Length: 408
Ligand SMILES: [Zn+2]
Image 1 (cartoon, rainbow, N blue to C red):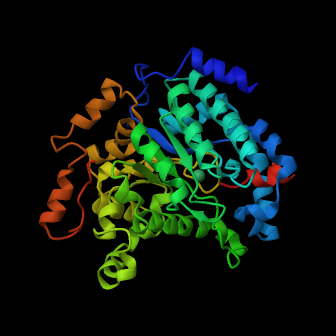
Image 2: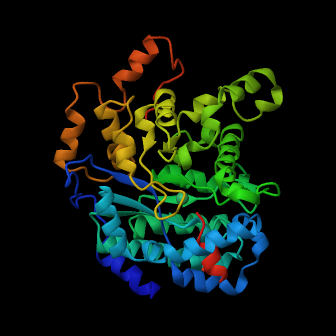
């Protein structure tokens, strides 16, 4: 099955020349950077090896949470596996293109390297097959066996060079090892070299002993996990060493984006916060991209003011219950965003990062405004001139398996 998928992908690779539909309903051209797919054959491969203690979202869950997860897994089974159902939901929501990534429950970093490699290949081949069947509606973000960095680098190259993927999705740590660890440097170097987008998505908080109730392991654990991961990328020198990396952090970037001043203060005050970087930490933070899964307009506009409209990417978390059903409505209804900023956030930024051809009429949406293009939003200049958002400078920019499936 996997080989057939690979073959299909090779015979009809996703192409940059393929026209991308947009504005069919008169809405903004929209690309979903944060949406998941499940690969049953990979699930079957690892099922005999699963140990609950290896997965924080499973380990730190109350009985009530496990029941909700079980029911959710049943309810979303079709949406997370069927391409045709996916297309119908996209059409209803006005999503032109999905950048499809695996369900985080399928990272499988806890397996031995060979199973990790094989499961990653199964998942990536499935994603590639969906893209090959609908190259105008999907682009692929691969998964990597990060428990074996050499194998991860090899799979990264296969994803990009053979399967035509535009990026990868990675977790925020690898079985407790932070992504600033020396073993991952070759991976960051390769990601930078290939110019692909790295979508960083947590799989639950690694130390969640106090987060098992109320689904806190996800509700606050996921953004907390991203906060820690980004901090390691900054203070550990990864973003300094690989300045051209393109990283999008899920769930609005977690909490760090809202309290970044504390990093700069620490960097100035303490020598132990300057071991690997010379510049203030927020300089690196502003290189990152964030999805729009923040639920409130004030949070969305805060991110825009601080990081620029060109650093925000529409996300849905399809098809999970922590996601957004009307992502375009959320963006379109933000009172503090201009039309060109909404167009950039809805799809033009992701199109640029993922090398998706933008349909002419979607491009016009961008040009409707006489304001500056997304890279240098005029509103940001005005905000800066008014003395607020002073640091806003855009950078260049199921039983078991069923239960596990019900989480993101
Ligand atoms: Zn997600």
